[in-house]
Image (cartoon, rainbow, N blue to C red):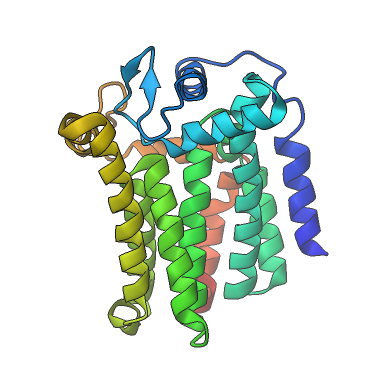
Length: 286
């Protein structure tokens, strides 16, 4: 029953009136146009913007917008924003399951409700923006790895799904889909001194699946766009962007002073929550 409360909260917050305002610069019109060109040119492997190859992002998110526009009968504001709303809603479900597995059902309920009503998350779940979809894939990847490690029976299958989710994330926004789960899970299991997680042979089928999915996409992309496209996507736009992006370069302390405002109202309680967790010890920190 508690999971229904979380889902209904997300439905109420994310889905109503998605087409009630124009697409906002800079991202929303750009992403909608890329999806429109996918529909008209049927070029699903390499995104295009104004007839030119678009190197900044892989194709999956734009294909999702194109898909929702087909279902809804046209590409408009609602169709462009619907994937973000759906994946924002599904991430609430993942957070509920994660809280329930790591603590109890009440924790899952509170986690889902807090996330749904956090300012930045609410905003991203109602925009044609890649981050809501990426958040879903990274959260699903982390959850599947955690569930797999705790369940010896079916572990290989859960790891397989985790690597498939990670591959989907790469097709959405490349390296963050790998870096975020790796940092989260790596620090968590090192802190718990669970080195067995890193050496488990159950990872191998998933690693091969991940390599196959990404390798297959790169081969298709190379066949359609040549090495110039791969060089532009993986090096000139992506690898260099990891270090500095015009318009997006921020100091290392950027998130420290932006997080409180972006995650109001709940960031007000963060200092007391950290103190409480430290007093409770490892169980609360988990």
